[in-house]
Amino acid sequence: MTMRNKLVVGNWKMNGSRPANAELLAGILAARPFAAADVAVCVPFPYLAETAATLAASNIRWGAQDCSAHEHGAYTGEVSAAMLFECGCRYVIVGHSERRAYHAESDQLVADKAKAALARGVTPIVCVGETLAQREAGETEAVVKRQLSAAIHTLAHCAGEMVVAYEPVWAIGTGRTATPEQAQAVHALLRAQLRAATARADEMKILYGGSVKPDNAATLFAQPDIDGGLIGGASLKAADFVAICRAAH
Ligand code: PEP
View 1 (cartoon, rainbow, N blue to C red):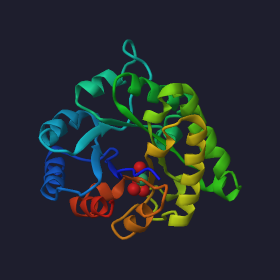
View 2: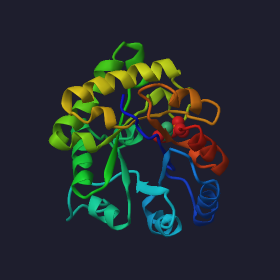
View 3: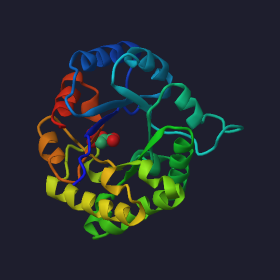
View 4: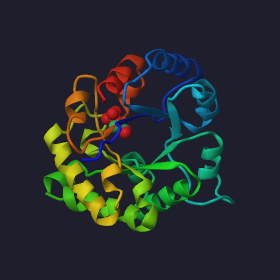
């Protein structure tokens, strides 16, 4: 079996301020090194430059939480992948369930954003996940496969370059985590779908997200197809985020 380095990514969402960010990043920097785990923070756009300056000399990466599917032009309010690359972003989250829900992002738009990111050298973290109603209706597999399939087909021969994040919507910000077994079952399905599409499937990272905390991270990360986490609420406190990064090895 291929060994995959774990990856832990903080998703700050629309949180932070210059003083709070400085304190949080200082706390993360002070806790290094994180053994075998790669660590990144995805911050609001206005903080990218400062984050880059703070983390530049470290091995902590940074990224954004969304990007445009377009290259440039008359798209007021949007931010292009090229701009993110210029700001040193290694990653960009695309298709987070909050954007799918509140900004009506379709599977195809998410896939187009992932393609735009890859074209500019920024690794897309493509989020998939079912709602509670979909889980209860037995639709989990169909939903996540449909979401991932759009990205696979649009990225084509580059599909192996994306990071996938499985985030059950019912577990995001709710304190209700998928059990390690529930998460692993979906990760295994996603891995199988990736294997059918790319020879690189066994090297690809599939992150779990949804109320990951210091006390549940280690058992989640111990699952064979869980390659790390996308961390929301717990990424805003240095001690919690650091503990989660340490649980990844
Ligand atoms: C997220 O929004 O990506 C997330 C996983 O949030 P939380 O950890 O707060 O559930």
